[in-house]
Length: 144
Length: 144
Length: 144
Length: 144
Image (cartoon, one colour):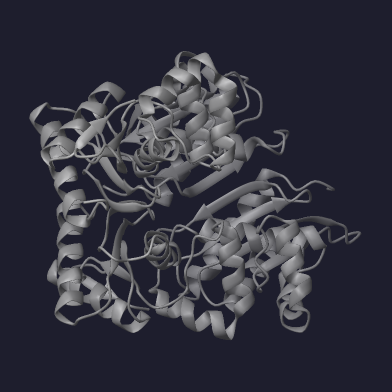
């Protein structure tokens, strides 16, 4: 189970969006990246603005690029802004350091399989949906 | 009326500039973008400096990219600077997060049809002109 | 039916991939963009290499940016290479001018609703799957 | 009359589009730049695809940046492709070297006042509309 597959990515997206609808959150965009930071699947709900895919990917990308949930990046952006700015430079601006980028870990050995990024509601609610999706797929969520 | 057309964009620009002239504001530049962030029409008044078109487009782009008037981005740039910096990175520096980027909403169902961005006078006065132009076209303005 | 929604995008992806599986094509990546060139949904089949999402998006982006299927861009890249190189420059390298980027048109009035981009097998087979997906969703395909 | 003003730019756009409508050309996008290569006014007709503003600006930009109509750039792209590629690099990809970017010259002393760029129909027809607009404003057109 070392590689995340499309079937698992679909489950994560479906269940994260279900959580959003049941909680009456704003329209969500959900991205699932593999352990190389590359997109496996993405869906944007009707009514979500057009930059949401990039924001969702940017949250997940920062998480898997650093090996830590994007909540950690959010804290570092406040305590060490120069470090997070440097990461942004290294990544050509592709990191979004706010909560909602959650690592997907293998529940057996803890290895990183990829990351989920969600945007649309508050960062905290986005993160809740990411965790719900990952756990519904039988995997472990790491928020940072 | 789901798509903003050139005729509506022209009305918005003409009326926004009329508001600026009647208020003795400095020379304005007015950009109208569609709901995908792409330019429909732009005019720069004589005497406006040459980077004004990019600033006007950057205000409108930030609004429609995030689905919220640029006044909201201005507030976030102060409360969560790392988030707005990340948006700038994602957009290759094409977002200008100060007031004066105003969403154009369909008055019937509230859907986003595009955005107006204005620069030239104070951000507050720029925003006033954007609202005047949008309302003169029979559409709804959302400043964020 | 002026705006393409997520439900339609899902149908297009599912049916395009079904066509690929039934035809024993290589693993496909399918991207669906709206009429502003922004991602609605994307899926990458297991075994597809990691740059495939960008290629799929680049085929669809070129189509909808120019208002013509990417087969037209492929022909222009041969007859007027300097024009297609210029389009690449304008788009920061985000256009992939080979077949497989297919416009989605409203079957009633012909307006462009978005585009599908597929990569994985030959460009011709990629295009066949895009057409199959679009038609299965009750929409019109325009290959250029 | 050394500087091109907004009133003249509006006349050029209106008359160029009138020529396009009377000739049953496809939807046009018309950009007017000043002698520094900066946008004064732009309009995109309904039905024109979203990258058309960048293409129109790129034709006009190449003309005024080199001080010659873009027809000359089109010829050089064929005879000396490495030179036009170098120009594209210098300009960060902002030059479109095909006909339709026409210099606006002061009819009295021949100095360059700016340029018009048009895209939508064939490059030759785009150029015809640019010339019509410039001449209707009482200025001299230089196609290269």
